[in-house]
Image 1 (cartoon, rainbow, N blue to C red):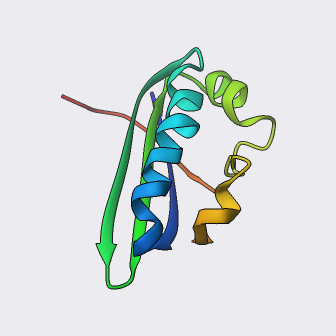
Image 2: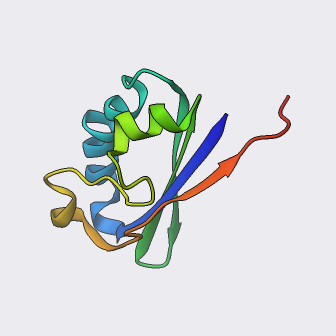
Length: 101
């Protein structure tokens, strides 16, 4: 299994609306892709900003490619992300799982 992570930041005042947007776009985009083994969409407030940390699990590099395209290191964005995000990682991190419980 492979874990894929990404971070983005909104204004605190936009956090609830971005959460709703992610649940309508990104969450189905991740979880409905064959080979997805789950996803955690998390958030935490920090001052006037909210950090969103997305964690997804994939059965193979091929499954990630089906979701993300050929550039496995590039983050996937949705049409209205620009309206919410004040900062974002343009790349993602991947970790190969060697043990879990």
